[in-house]
Length: 270
Image 1 (cartoon, rainbow, N blue to C red):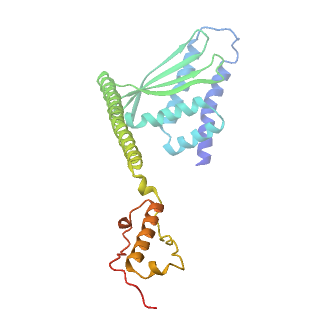
Image 2: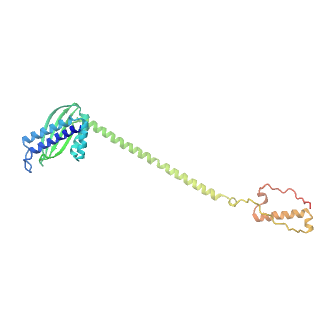
Image 3: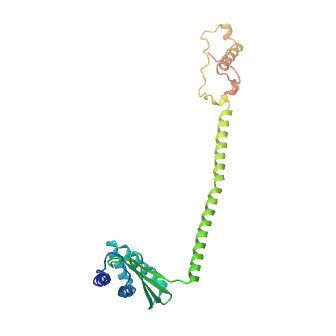
């Protein structure tokens, strides 16, 4: 395959060499195109056209890779144009006509109109005025007016469809912004409720819970015999201790709720 690829590249190079040899005697100025030049350009364009369309796609891809390494964009673009147009053309039938023109700078352009199974195709080959370098290479399938209108309408539908899809998506995203405000309001209300609840707590709840009752004031060890002998005096002493505790803690004895209840006071035996 590599040998075949080299032969194909050599054939294309030889076509350019033949053109360069044919035009090497010309001066640097722009000269009118002669009949011999026109015939040589037409022959070279038709030969290159038939060589390219007869090559397998595998070999064309190898050539594209080879010309890419040489940074020859003209050949790479021309060969890629054939690969992209091959399916729309079908089988090759014949060459209808070949036209050679010359621009104001002296460059030559050969246009080969060929008939294929599905539609015609134009092959364009351009060389500089000295015929030493390719300036253009391409394949252009000839589409009918109906095909061009259908393709344009299809592109219009696709483009408008994409625009509407994007607009609908943006409208949906914008519609979600109201939920962001709702979430912010909910979070704000929750924060205010927590703050109000914290401020509304009574001061009594903020006081530390008494886990151990303070010791009652010590009863004097030596009471007068008159006070110690009667139960009324003992009750008075206990009542005084309770009153002192309530005055010290600021809470009533009934609020302790510790399960302690004084039911009866009895003097112990000695």
